[in-house]
Image (cartoon, rainbow, N blue to C red; front, side, top):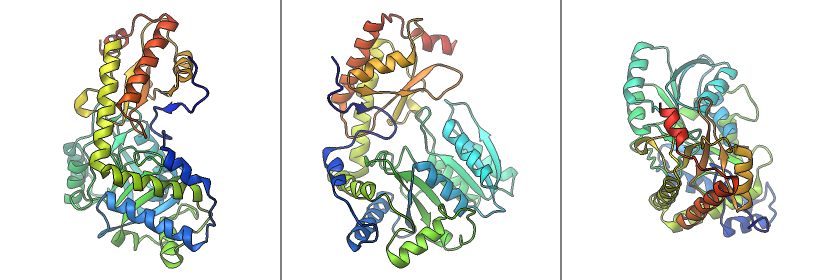
Length: 380
């Protein structure tokens, strides 16, 4: 049965399915310089900062655009032009962080592990001890290309002990996985509206240690992506420097109210964990195997080995599942064929079970009988 008459459920790492209340918040137009909208911006900045318990040490600087805009803004502002960044890589987004750091003209060193191997605090300790010129460390907390969770708290402690600066891409973890600025030292942490806080896409934000940001004037080589300029202008005028994504900001305000009402980070993580368990139970029953072992898998997005059956191809598989009301995500790996299923958004375990049923029906329609062999072959 086709479900084109309703919005499909987005089982992706963002954009994701939002609630009716969040959608409804976008029905009003706002003046970008109006005092009422400026009050919403201030409120959103405060609510976001509360999630990571950073009000006493950090400031929240919102930025127009996708999450990558804010990652680039953070690197370009926080890292001096003569700085040296160690980028920790175990997936596509770590590679993107390294590339944009190089494009910003900053000296870049990379440390890369396999897609299914988390970076360890011991790795970072060794690397920092061997190179005193490294000033900053760039870490992807939850690598969205696979769903692997890197040990943020342990790595942050090592970076702090060495007296270096930590820049964290928390795009897929912020709001769900616990992050506490009081116990996990970082100088910059980056996230976006269209992820675990369940707002629409279009706005990123960076939590920057205030004492650090105060010293960053002139670091940025970009006008639009200058976090220091964005912050000082907003503090002085309460306004954004350039046209803000007004509807996104107001919808994010509504989403954050729902986030608090649900119970905040612990409740959000619990729901996503329940989604993950429902997904895994159903997919295992169908014969699918996940790319990562459970010990390093965050309940955000799961990478599955594709069926080895010659009748399988991702595009028709995707199209048929989409016709049943669910949008999956293509794989991001190059060595093995995979696809990804997100566990985040305004959904619960019931929707995950329905998604598994859609996959089951699609396999039958495509005549796919061999599912688990892909994982076994990859392991061999």
